[in-house]
Image: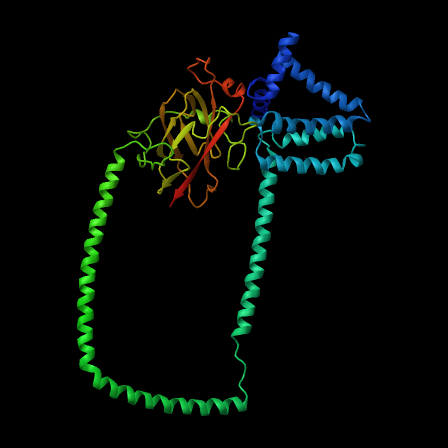
Length: 422
């Protein structure tokens, strides 16, 4: 039911420690000895009472909360930041309602209603920001289509006007007729002279044609032998390259080909952990790494990726699972914790999604694309991102923990684009 989905979303913000609200409530519960649920109810009820009682100050308190929450998500807790499109819709809606505050605050409980409207932008199953964003995109696409239609119509009209010939005048007709007569007389003279010259040079032309054919035949045979030797040399070098490990910084093509569901090279059975929760979803569509600080402990070559920048999946895409493999090597002298995220989960997933690299360790990752319609799916921005941090030398944990990222001074991100070859 819709109410169950909404309650689960609210409970996740109260109990799941990956949200800053749950961490704040947990700290308050430990300090006061009260239950987390009771503190959450007290906060909500207190906020509503404050907005009702503070008649003249309700405008200040409501807008302070509506600005403070996104500020914390963007600048203090960037790992919890919503997508850029949703933030754009949020601030446009917030700005529009704020301009109407003084006119609408006479309504009973106006500021409580304003908080509820902006909450519905993210509260499932409503998620109003998605509906607003889709409608805006549709309106923009319709306007572009109308503009293109108008341009095509104008171009066709200009083409028709330019293709209509102007009627010739009587003087032009007389000049054209006399010019045609002169040209036809000159052409007959040239044809007669050319026939006489061809009769005289026929034996010489035959000899030159025979020599040209012989030269072309020998050139083709030489070119064919050169191509064969080049192909053999290429195959030999490819065979040698496939028997060695790639060097640091060198791209390596995926060698696994396509692995169907439950195939022999399938590295993982059952549900992928990336499908559980929203931790593995990228919050931004932009490329590059997102971090609040880049410390001197990090180096661009801490992790070496094979391939370095992108994976290319070849058609067909109607298999249940299409899997390519990639290698990552810890090139540093420290242990490294990593977490994989993506902007197309669960259609594009990676296994294993989290873990720890020992010093100089190499891991193999399975990148799996589930069945999709190439013509109906928006895959232009598909990518996976490897977030990683260097663990301190005194950390002996063998299992990955989210605290490794929360306690780290700096974090790096490596983006791998996912491309499709139809």
